[in-house]
Length: 133
Image 1: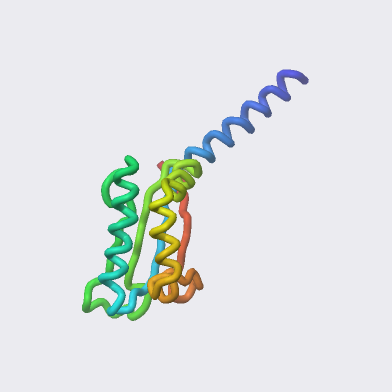
Image 2: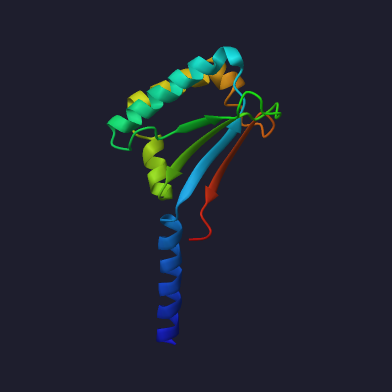
């Protein structure tokens, strides 16, 4: 009986450790009004600069855009970021007061009101987890 309980405890602990260290991505699909694109890129650069200075690497948040002649009229932008664990995600989102201030300022701007809407129509956000090695 003792052996069985210990085995179950080991399996449970191992599954917790695995879930805490599972590779993940944050992905955003959204649109940026043409008049806000340069402001959005500047905001993203500021955030990336703070993260780079904190040791998280260059271009932590990567932005992509469909080609001009692409027929899709919505969700033309894509942003991706990579995390090794939930702890890594939390660390990058709580890196410094400067980081927090950049985001606070953004939420009060047109970028916050017109791009980061998280409404599943004009902005889709997902945390995705790798399921196959």
